[in-house]
Image 1 (cartoon, rainbow, N blue to C red):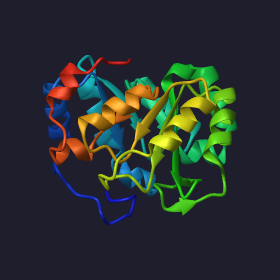
Image 2 (cartoon, one colour):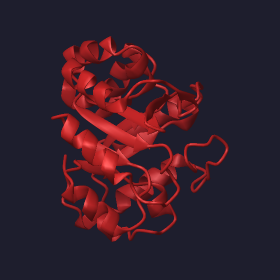
Image 3 (cartoon, rainbow, N blue to C red):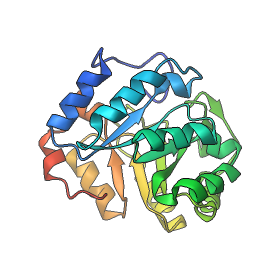
Length: 225
């Protein structure tokens, strides 16, 4: 996708299971799944995602998000083998769910996605804008039991303009839990800079698919579990 705009998505693999096989073959120890259709309100990929989680079992850890709209849906994904669930819209609209989920599955299995645009949090697959400040909300979800934050700049996503380093560093300094960054990565230098400012990990998709980054970076990475 380009800057989170629905309709700009590009298909690199017609069968997501083939993509999964490829990333496992490249040595990926953790794979990030996002169900875009789910984020936009459809459950048509539900069975496919279950197959992907089970196929990755014992080969790569999976963290999955997109369309997780209930406590039971999140727990089911953990039950079938996902290592972490990524909740965004659900956590924004019902933050108390984070505490309930943490009590039942543990904080280490919970990533809360804070996607932001023009300084405010976006929801529903980036199609709706809130008036919520991501930094104060980050502190709130930390206190409720989130294990990690996935901090994504909608405006940088898929644009190859570079990560939003300033706001990423601000988020890292605002909370004590680990912060993943997403959006804008172009070069290995971007990854190195994110590491230097304290980012726990970086989500990379399009930069790999468009061959902006060498696949060797996966095997050579100092992996944070």
